[in-house]
Length: 130
Length: 130
Length: 130
Image 1 (cartoon, one colour):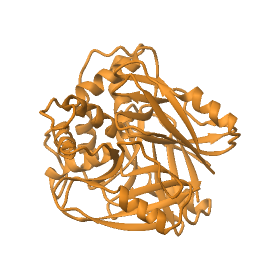
Image 2 (cartoon, rainbow over the protein chains, first blue to last red):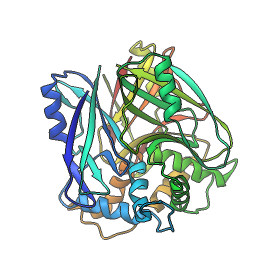
Image 3 (cartoon, each protein chain N blue to C red):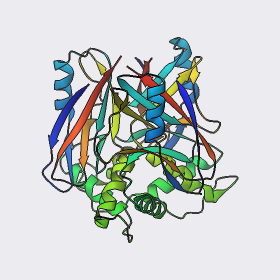
């Protein structure tokens, strides 16, 4: 099990984790199996996506427009509720195959962290399974 | 592999599974690895969330408002279709790291069952991996 | 690790993978553990669903109506952006318990591939874990 920290710089942001995870895989000398990525927060999520220029902003705008503008009860900050719901919809975790000491991904797939309530330092747990 | 049953009490409900899963982890004497949670139903889902008071109702209302009100074909009960779509969007399964015989979670993260068509008894399968 | 290819026939389509995955499980002689399914594309997703007649079209219509119609930036094809966002919301991957050489699923659960930008040949990676 490895922990990595990712600094985010905006309220909402898409961050490419692929190279960072591959670096941990090489350091840990993981040859084949699965890499499990888990983010330890309720307003951030893990996914894969095509990161053609501009698409990160497309994703963030579409996701923002998705969540209905209701009168939320959240005790500290009701405006915070859509961040939680987006994190739940995308999900906090992903498992990706590993082969020959790197992630097995499609041509356009990048592993991403979706920040919905930054800027913050986000903690991720990487686990490797055979 | 362990199976647990969870009784839900409302049509839509958020149920905190964290203590129940940690209890199984201790009983099974799982020290480190991953805990995989899988719900055996198509109108319930597994996620993690902050469960500050009132947020469960926020999540359920936002999710209900998300699904478009179309003229669905579902043969037995077309009003049932949004329950299925929410279950698909959140997902039936989650893997969570385990360390020192308990789930590794962030400060605000609770593992939750989302019931979209209760009340029912829901079956979950827990698998442990090293 | 096994790779399988699935031919899709429509722009958007739900394809039942259950029998195909069970066949690989039997061929690989996997007795118990987890089966991890990962699709190597950014406009397709993996989930489980009830496939009562007509429900596949219900799911696809509801999902299409979910994504807001914004002025997307995607450099090659902005109309393509909703396909990416749906793939991200459903997710590229799923782990399912295996027992006695077959997937452990609820009565109504089928493992599905959701095609959002077909027709294409889609590549999937299956990994088996104990």
